[in-house]
Structures are given as structure tokens and as C-alpha cells.
Length: 441
Image (tube, rainbow, N blue to C red; front, side, top):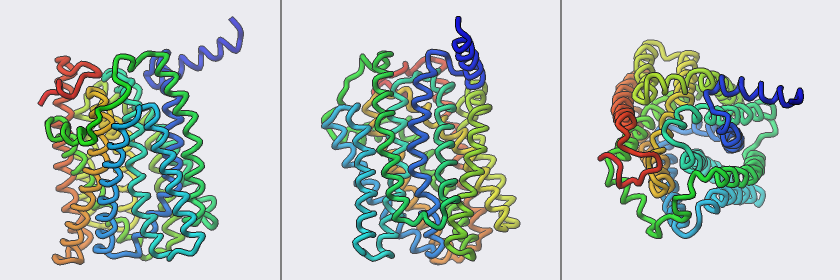
């Protein structure tokens, strides 16, 4: 055996020991890592620019933009589900990202021809917020169909670190090029990165085809574009996941408005750089936790712990924060919440979808990930506007206490959903790749 071959085998052995991934799973895991890396890089270049805008708006104005986001997210999912019913899955996924690349270039051209900058800033905010959920939902729908429940607990944590690596490169680009990274420029860069992901999708399709992981499943989905909604309302498991997502958005909304409140005294350029720094720290922590802890936690303690530990911890820390909501403490807790959510909660959420069929994975999952998520955004942001400047006049500390209560409910829901999944896995109630009709209700 050659020296290079020994070196390669040694590296593979170390990789498998570190990540708990089996040798035959390495290629698929690495390609999936690269795929989500590119997707998150494309979005995270946009995110600091987007998040710098709301600090110039009040609670009511922010709530209005989130309402528009929900409306356009719902319309986008309906269009996606309709198109998913008319084409093969292998064509569906790359075309989604081509469509987003074209849409960002269209906004770029609108800037260039002189459309009102204030109006386009709000268009940019809304459409970027739609994209922020859509691209990751489609990614996990595509990837999760090829893994069993036992595999997913080991592999998904590593794949998810690709998102964090991309989330580091995006903000780092914004920090290094803060002066030249205008809204117009980031739109072009994002479009190019999305198009670069297309060969990775093709390579993944070839790889999974060679493994035959979906040879027994239909290539096309049902022709009924509303079948995803039918399954959503028919199964308690999917409704439970939706409830978990809804409460997650509540906690996120309280943090988002608190972040906007405490950053209002900074200039827009300072906000972009500060938010880029937060993302850099958050995603570095996420990679470390994802590599060394997340899959081990899921395997040892089950999804009930993975889905509830972070929410309960966040709830307790928010109560402490309410006593002194200084800028530094708010930002530290934002980093801790995001790192825990991205590294532990997010991959655990995706494991829940390994026991459903393609219809639920490609049609119902976007409803939960996007429509329910953005619907939750609308509900919570208007609630915050009502208890804040809209009517009750809650202080920042009082808003944080309210958010802590929501975090505890989020944790309780995560524990319930995770325990149901753990029990079904032990009892083998839901065979891998089973039809949704066989899900425990």
C-alpha cells in the first residue's frame, strides 16, 4: 500500500472517530457539507446588511415588514408546492436556487435603474427573509430522504457544521468589505454563490443514486399541490413540530426586537460590523459544539433532551438578563442562544423528518419551516408591538421576562415531541422512509 493511501486511510479514520460517521457515509456527508456551506454563505452575506435596517424602524414598522414577509413566504410555498407536483425531485431542487438567483439579480437591476431606495430596502428585507428559511428547508428535504433515523443522529450534526462554516465566511466577507458591500453588491455575490451550488447538487444526486437510497420511492410527488396541507392537519407529529417552530419564533422575535432596541444608538455601518462579528463568534461556537457534542448528546440522551435543553436554559438566562439588559449582556445571550439552537436544536429538528415520506418531506416540511415560521413571526412581532410602544408600554426588561415564559413553553414542547420520537424509534413504530399515513397520531 502506498504512503499516500496510508495517509488517506489514516485521515479517514480520524475523521470517522471525530464525527462518528461511517466510512461509506463520508462522501455523501462531505458533499452535503459543501452544499449547505455554499447556501449559508450566500445568505449570510445578505443577513448583516438586512439586519442593519430594522433599527431605523419602530415596533409597528417592524411588525408591518414581518407581516409582508409572511404573506410572500406563504405565496412562495404555494408556488413551490404547485411546481413540486409537476416536476421530478431531481429537477426541483436546483431550479429553486436558480429562481432565487434570478430574483436577487432582478432586485439588483431595480437599484441600478433608479427605483426608490427606501422602497427597495424594504423589498430586500422581505425577500431576504423569505429566502432565509426557504433555502435551508429545501436543502434538508433533499438530504434527509437519504438517511435513516439512526444515521441521521450521527451524520446531521456534521453536515450542519457546513452551515456554520458558511455562516462564518459570509459575515467575515461583510466585515472585511464593509465599505463596498452595499445592498446592490451583496445581491450579485449571493446570486453567483447560489449558482455555484448547482454542480454540488448534481454530484449528490449521482452519489445517492449509486447507493440506491431512494430507488424504491416515486420520483414525482402527488399531482395535488395542496397535499402537503392535508398531511399537515392530519398528523399530530407534524402539528407538534409546527408548535415547536411557532414557539421558537416567539423566542427569536423577543431577541430580535431587543437586539434592535439596544443597537438603535449605533450607526448603520457600526451595526453591520457588530452584527457580522456576532455571527462570526456564534458560528465558530456552533462548529465546535456540532463536531464534538451534538451527535453524542442526541445518541446518549435522545431527541427529547436535544430539543428541550437549550430552550430551558435560554428561559432561565433571560430571567437573569431582565435584571440588567445592558448591551453587552444582550449580545452575549444572543450568541449563546443562536449557537445552542444552530448546533443542537437544528440538527435534532431535522432528524424528526427522517421517518416521513417524500410528500411530507418536500411539501409539508416547507409549510412548517416557512409558513408556520413566518406566521409565528407575524403573531409574535405584533404581540411585542402591542405590549411595547403599541399599547401596554412594556420596558425592555419586561419584554425579556415575557420572552422567558415563551422559552419555557418552547422547551416543554420540544421535550414532548422529542420523547414521542425516541419512543417510536425504540419501539420501531415508524420504519425508516415510511409513509406519513403510518405515522403515529
